[in-house]
Image (cartoon, rainbow over all chains, first blue to last red; front, side, top):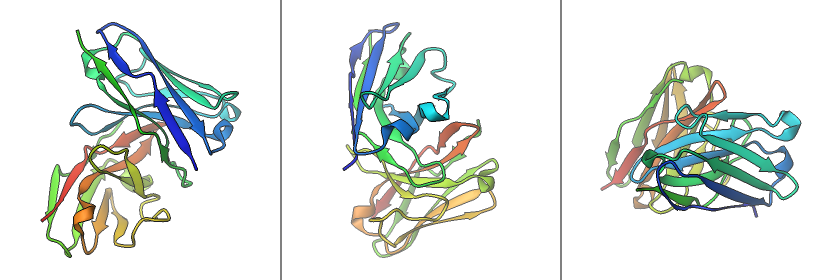
Length: 120
Length: 106
């Protein structure tokens, strides 16, 4: 079975930093393009960013709302995805999901999410 | 990036057909996915490539595209279909999500 397990969420003050992790098993992580998607309380889904496989360049793309503050990294040796969040704002409060998203070929898997609260 | 627009809510009587539209610039030139999300759960894929269903998704779920509007149709809606539904497409290496539609079956 495919499993994506996020961790690292918590309470942080505005301007602070946090690193989320996503442990992946049951799929070929080294070839997977991985995403972070977030959902603010009572709101819809918002794509945060994506990292391609290292074989495809390992490049990253980000939503405008987080570009320059968030960094996505991957460690293929441990099948782990990371989201490094800096200069956090109150509006970054959300549940953060690690996922593979279908682009063309079906490949869709989601974690259970980890909650981040940014509050004074 | 362009936005994807969905109605905030749709209501349907049990056994009837619900349609949820999603419109966006040049959506007809992209593949649309649809996700369902129930309270307290992660989203899950119900339609990809505009009209394909992953295994395990009931046949009453279907997707279509006309021009720049994608539509999710739920035929013979059941109480268990109550959920938030999101359309999603890729635009210039960024994933776009619609704002979500709350489906009420009553």
